[in-house]
Image 1 (cartoon, rainbow, N blue to C red):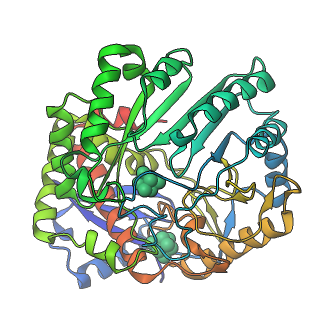
Image 2: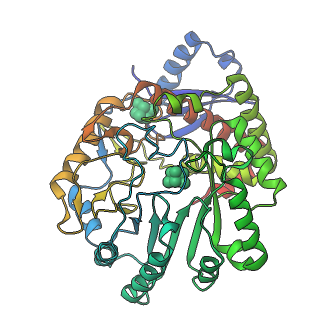
Length: 453
Ligand code: SF4
Ligand code: SF4
């Protein structure tokens, strides 16, 4: 009998995670230890006979919305717009997706979004957001602060168009071009959040100017100026993003944030591996033993104290586990964790072309400012993703928790299955997170309250 079950052993107990019901079931008992492969086979048969876990009868993966429901969403409920204001940047970070170290991604260049393209993009977004109760506009690059005057003009323009609808703005910046004038302007725009990438002790290792000078000192000076002169902006509008190459580096970054009294990053994530070349492989080649020790230390800290820095890394996946739908699936498994294109945001590049998001390397024509959505292209994309998921993922025991995104399955204009090594890493992370979730439930269940959506 085929099942989709994973066993999770903590110090105190053993659990079965059954992908069909999406439930985590405690199955402790003397017969369960030690859990060798042979035992797990016998246990699975026993638990299936008892009706604790279910047989896998899934035949296909399907999108959670029908195509007509999806088109309705496109018509008036797109929640956010991402504008690629610039394809140029004043830094040359080694792990930047535009560094030339990632397959099929553009590289830095002088293309900038014209102001009338940006205005048309905002108008287009406005007309496709009418049924949503709020709207967000995100300025992206390259480095968007190369265009500070343009940002100010576009914020005024968007406010004039959206009228009384709650409207917020953000920009993602490397933090080197922040000026007193920009901070003073931010002070007058309290719904504008500035996300600064700050990686801590090892920041300069990868984030530097074209002449290899590090960028950390400049950023820290700007932050300290903001803290002293615009405390409201620093406290409420400046957020940090932290990228690390390993858990060992995450420990260093945490120490750095604490020792510099910086507020906790909004997210702490790993440098992207997918589509990277040998340079990216070398950046991500961690000392496994050291990294495991660092991971265990962070996990202990998180379980025991709910540490905020650890929360900025672990909470996203733990929230997925905590808030998962526990509706059992039969023939069809809904694609629950993948955003449909433009369901979360509409990305418009500097030339006015639509793309799934700022992190995809897709060259598939999904539409543009002049002609609107290319529904045929979008339908092909949705169908291809569904087919790949149906072929590659319906036998996978972590499919209902897997964050495989559309971007991971497109390269240039080709659809591809997720490469085996990426799949292996995703599975390993999910199993690790399931174990962490079970440990939190046992040792510090109060922490689960922070995970509710
Ligand atoms: S600052 Fe951002 S856009 Fe610029 S090189 Fe670094 S990662 Fe790329
Ligand atoms: S881990 Fe791989 S096979 Fe499993 S659901 Fe995710 S992408 Fe599919």
